[in-house]
Image (tube, rainbow, N blue to C red; front, side, top):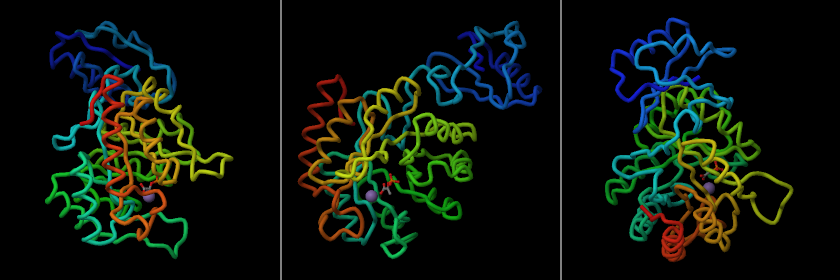
Length: 338
Ligand code: PEP
Ligand code: MN
């Protein structure tokens, strides 16, 4: 249920509603919004009686939320969420570009990649220090040394750092270094991690599980919001289908569907989505045309030498050309590149 307060409701009116919700043994969530103050209620098993709140001072309307996901839904918050990552915006009219290597491999590799993507116009640097690899014999990431390199790259370029957390034990360390904490596809339904991400006070990039439905994905995001963190972006990175010609099938259907169902920013990852360097630019362009609020693209100074995902990483020159193209597409749909 959602309680929408009148614009002239006093702080005391809002507090009285919050107290009443708590008194019922339920959780009140003040929903940040430009147009209105609203209080979402979670924790109720069945439907709540709207009459409990309708008569209260300052209450404009009581809305029953029809979706199983509440705090992430557009019913609860009609306007788009814009996440301010230290001055770089994620969500809203301007499209954010995140780029960098799959894995942080060395100081030279990371700094070269960071300067290249910065020069081409990206605002966010991606790079994994903890890597979820299918084989235990493959490169697992540099761990904290990788996080320190990301911090150095941020220092040199001003790019905001997006990096993945895999293990709850590493979360405090990742939060310390990251500007945006990525939860990888394989962990989308790791509910203990999702709950912890609700408490970190930093934005979360929640990748879609390779076999997750849109509803399951939104429910995973709901965990993070329900635990107190409203700064969540959803990243479509391809799902597993019967197709074997590509690594995954980038589900661009998800972009407009999500934009209708949720206020959270939607990010498209064409690199993992198709998994073939030659075709990554086409899917990045398509993601933006479909309405994504950001793209995240793997870029490596020497893809053929990469320790992970070189086959889908763009060279800096290819990335610079892609940036030129996405600016045109963004303009064609009344948006811009941040
Ligand atoms: C990555 O971003 O390098 C990654 C491992 O992504 P995903 O979790 O989507 O596979
Ligand atoms: Mn990768």
